[in-house]
Length: 82
Ligand SMILES: [Zn+2]
Image (cartoon, rainbow, N blue to C red; front, side, top):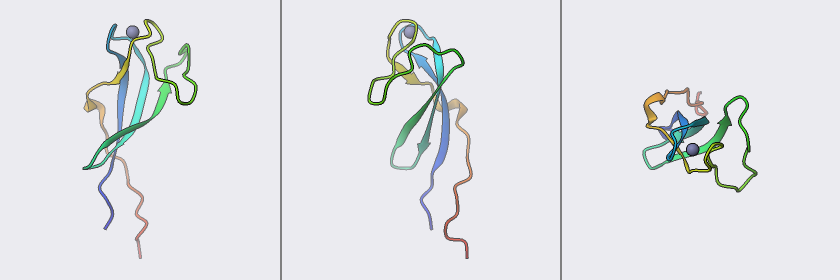
């Protein structure tokens, strides 16, 4: 049996000014939540280089995923079909 995991999508919003810079995508498992993909909005300024912190394009504030209100279930590949 595989591990339960759910793909989640959240707005990447600024803690300081509330500006939404794009979308964060990640994976939820019972043990942890990992956001590993940032999808900038169209026209996003200042795409971070690998290893850099993601900052608000407007005020350079910290960017957080919003509540996982937009979480959506995704199909988890079944590798043990037989
Ligand atoms: Zn901001």
